[in-house]
Amino acid sequence: MNTSIRQLTARRIWDSRGRPTVEVDVVLADGARGRGIAPAGASRGSREAVDLRDGGNALGGFGVAQALAHVNGPIAARILGLDAMDQQAVDDALVALDGTPTKSALGGNATIATSLAVLHAAAASAGLPLWRHLAGDSPVRLPLPEIQIFGGGAHAGRRVDIQDFLIMPIGAASFDEAMVMTAEVYRHAGELMAKAGRRAGVADEGGWWPDFASNEDALEMLTRAIDAAGYRHDEVAISLDIAASEFRRDGRYVLGLEQRSYDSGEWLEVLRGWIDRYPILSVEDPVAEDDDAGMRAFTEAFGDRIQVIGDDYLVTNAALVRNAASAGCCNAVLLKPNQAGTVSETRAAMLAAREAGWGMVVSARSGETEDVAIVHLAIGWNAGQLKVGSFARSERMAKWNEALRIEAELGAAAVYAGRQALPVGWR
Image (cartoon, rainbow, N blue to C red; front, side):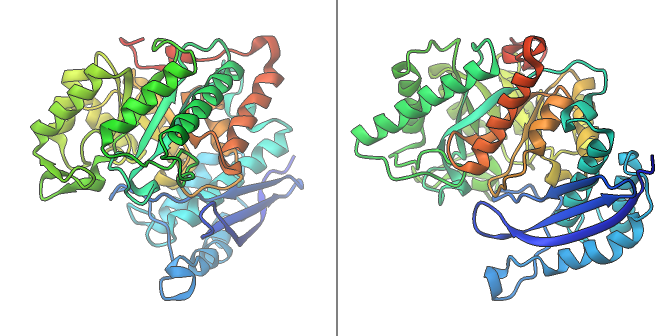
């Protein structure tokens, strides 16, 4: 069977914000086809792969004509004829062709859409679901989900400073039950917001719009929603994505909602108070990406109690994961394929985290599409956790529903990761 790449085609499609993005189709010599789509983030680490945008007035500067030209031109010229079954070789070729640390020459949106398309084509050629193609004979688990209930930060016009207020259904016995628990908490949160006269639609990722007087008000409301849904805090816990780089100014953490400013030590004391008062079991980017001392101090203080995730701090980079593990910073990594720029680089970051005994969370972006590849990555790599956004909007529900279909396909062999997906030493 000839699995060499015969054809590569890029087109402009639209993401969940109505902005242009890159879609790539790959055709192999044996006729197998694959399609990859690039998502886009609102809050971005300075060291992550960058989208190539056209700038100017048209489409608010978000046009992707240059990125499409790179796929149809130099990228196609370089990878046509390569074997789609050798994902590493294809991705290495993309990295070498770009030649920059952040994919700024070709555009990370061009490289990740191409990389994913090749991966899908390889699975199609093998006649396997993508998750099984990735897993081979290795065991898999349905991931513990992190689901946004209230949006915030860059996902909600900075109405509150904290970016995501999420839940983790750690007490579920299956992925299906985890979705039921999520639906109940999401519904009760909406009802509580409506009763308080604060329900004003949803944010970018489908979470309720955060009409609160303070950041802690959102935590209080989320805890009430869990209680109202009838769940104990050892069944449904809270996860926060602080995205602290977004509100650090001149070395201080500046909360716009509350008009308060903290140095790193003071900010950690604010977080300590929240962790002590609420059922918080995971915190992502508690400090800014350049606050190494703060991340080390936070991990030392709380890493034996909660999951400490690096997102902007680690940007899905294997070297940064290894460095952080050696320095005692974080105990989990967020894995965003477009943040790395290729599938192979994402996998390398995952393997580095696994070697360190860390938690691994495959994640969507705030600008998403109907593509469900990350679900297959989370399951096929047995990463253990999946963060998609909220429990509303079709680009989010498509991913949760795909995981349900895979669970049904596995039948009696299906295993839900649950709390066992959390870092070694804290379960």
